[in-house]
Length: 458
Image 1: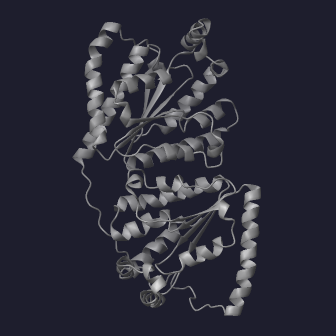
Image 2 (image 1 turned 120 degrees about the horizontal axis):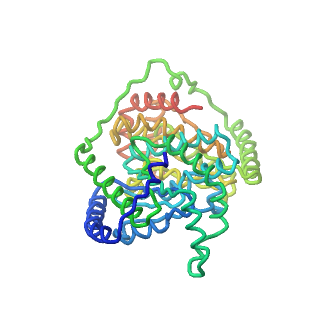
C-alpha cells in the first residue's frame, strides 16, 4: 500500500512558486463555499511520527482563512477525558456546519499505537476499526466531509531526518524520546497502519496516502486534495438539494406490549409512603455507591405527554446528592446543536465517572417526535436506530449503566390530566397547543414507540 508513496515525488522551488497563487485562490474559494453551505469538514492527519503533520497544518493555516478553521491536537487524554468514553473528546471537537476542523492525533491513534506496541489484540483492533468506519459513514451522512490524509516517509528517510534535526541546537527541540521509540517500531507500525487503512478506507471516507519526503510536494498535494474534496462535495450537495421531509403516520397493531400493560395497578397512600421511603433510601445508598465505585449512570425517561416523567425524576433526585447528578430536559435543538451531527448534543453531556445524568426525553426523539412530525427524513430516522444502538454500546462498554424507562398511560388518562392542568393555575404552564396536537397523533406515536422498543432494547 505505501509503496506508491516511496517513488521520490518532488516539486522544485520554481514550480512550487508558480502553482501556489492559483492553489491558494482555489482553497479560499472552496472555503468560502463551505462557509455558505450546510457542510462541515473534518481533516484527519495521520502518519508516522516525524512525517511533518504539524508543518502541514501550519501551511494549510497560512494558505487559508484561519478564522474558519479549528485545530485540535489530540495528545494524551486529560483527566476529564479519561472519565468519559474514548470517543467523547472527538465528538466534542467536531466542527459545525460551514467550518473546518483539523485533527492531529485522531480516533485512529490509540488503537494503532496500542496494536503496534502489543497491548491490543488483533480481534479487538479489527472491531475498533470497524466501529471507526461506521462512525465515519455516519458523519458523512450527517453532513460532515471526513477528509483523511496519511503522510508517509520511508524508514531510512525518517532516520536521516531525525538525526539531522537532533544534530543541530536550533532544531534539536523538535525531536524527543517518543520519535526514537516509534522509529524502532517502524516496521510494526507500518504493518498495523496498512491494515487500519485498508479496513477503514470507504467510499464515504477514503484515505489519501501522500508521499511526505519532500515538504513542498507534501504540502501542495495535501492542499490540492483538500480543495478538490471540498469542491466535489459541495457540487454533490448542489446537484441533490434536500427535499423537505414528510411526516410518518405508522399504525400500531391491535395487540402489542404497550396495550397489554395493566394500567389499573394502583397503590394506596399508605403503601406508597412505605415504598417511597424505602425506595428513596435505596436510591441514596446506590448513587453513593456509584460514586465510590466510579461508575456512571444514565437514566432515560420517555413516554406520552403527561405520563409523569417530570414527577418521577423529581422524586428520584430528591434522594440524590445534588452535586453528583445532572437533569437534562430535552427540547427542540438550538442552532448550535442543529449545526452538528444529531448525537453531538447528547455525547457532549455525558456524565463523568461516579456521576448521574437524567434525561427527560432523549436521543430517542429522532425516532419518535422527529419521525412523526416530519422533522427528519425517513432515511435519517431509520439510520438512527443503528446509530443509537452503537452509541449506547459505547456507553455500556465504558461501564456506564444505562437504564431506560417508557412511562405508559392510556389516552383517556392523558385527557384527564390535560384537563386538570388547564384548570390548575400552577400546572397551566405544562399544557400547550403542541400537547393537543401530539394527542391527535396518539396511534402514530404508539406505533413509533413500539418499533423503538423492539429495535433498541438490548
